[in-house]
Image (cartoon, rainbow, N blue to C red; front, top):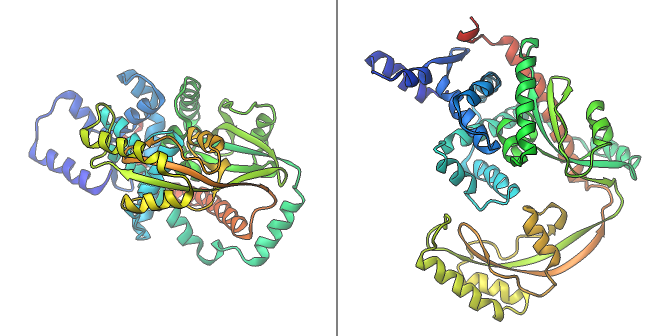
Amino acid sequence: MNRFLLRCLMAALLLGAAASSAMAQDASIAAVVNGTVITNQDVAARARLFALSAGLPMKPEIIDRLRPQIVSQLIDQTLQLQAIEQHKVVVTEADLTAALERIDKANGLPPDGLRQKLEAAGIPFSTLVNQFRIQIGWTDVLKKLLGESLRPTPEDVQAEKQAMQRQVGQTQYHIAEIFVPIENPQEEANAQHFAATVIKQLRNGAPFPVVAAQFSQSQSALTGGDRGWVSVDLLDPAIRDILMRMPVGAISDPVRVPGGYEIVSLLGTRKFGEGETTKLSIRQAFLPFPTAFNGGQPTPGQIDVLKRATALRPTLHDCAAVSAANDAAGKVQPANPGPVNLATVQPAQFRSLLAGLPVGKVSQPLVSHNGVALIMVCSREQKPIGLPSPKEIANQLVERRVSLESQQLMDDLHRQAIIVRPSQS
């Protein structure tokens, strides 16, 4: 819990404010981490967030079942927040916005779609924002601690490239993951139960990226659990054995791995370095709404924008015309978003639209939270996949080093911390 909430709690205690028994339970202490208090109100807010994203009924008994693992997660995040403050790391609003936009896109939601879902369910959006702030700040702490050793040398990149050349033709797996840590043997049963609850809801249709973003304790949480394409030699043997038997689209049972349980979703397979990828050049004309569209009945102003987009569509015969139309609409979004790798486009519905849109033909008006877009594919090119570029290889090495440093630092923080759980004392 942050200092502001702690001061509010202490003020309420000093003033002797009267509260109902339920409110008193919310304000009671769930854990103390190096002097920082985590209340049962914090735990209940996180449990409601999980229940909403996983499609669970928000009943007291459900929250009670989730409670032990959520308390453990909040303890970890409190340790991370203390490290962020110690190292004077500041997370910008731009970083937060970009991370939240990735989760919206991965779930086919309009901008701010996740915010609207949470607020409609009575869950403060700050619950999720604070979690993302910690995840991003923690990554920055790791990069700061690694310092110069984080940046791969040209020799590192060359060695990795040579290793990749030996892997050409081998199977790679595109996976997403949810990692549930176990800090000590006493938490094994709680972690196992929590992982089983997660897997049940995922198979009932809960969105994997949202659940991963909230509850996975790996660095991939910031991308909705998506680890991208992974070679077999970088996988835990238990995960590798399961992936080799899974069909694309399947979700594994919780798998016991060093440090906890892992749930894996198989998004695709390929032969490394073989095959082709589709590269697109696109242009868009974006017409903004006067006020954001939050669902329900559109306003007259929003209807007018949609009518203008519909009337504009027949006049757009080439990409230059689309760019000019975007300029005339105020250049709220760039006309040219840059080269597009079709395989990485999210959500899947938009990827399908781009895949089927003929070159030089404008799309139907695409309505989003903030306005209406008209899209045109200017060129479509098939290119051999080949090996990653030196820059891409360097980025992969950085991500690997940050992930290793994360686990080591968390182990150190737990060994050094004074953690009290009143219910266990």
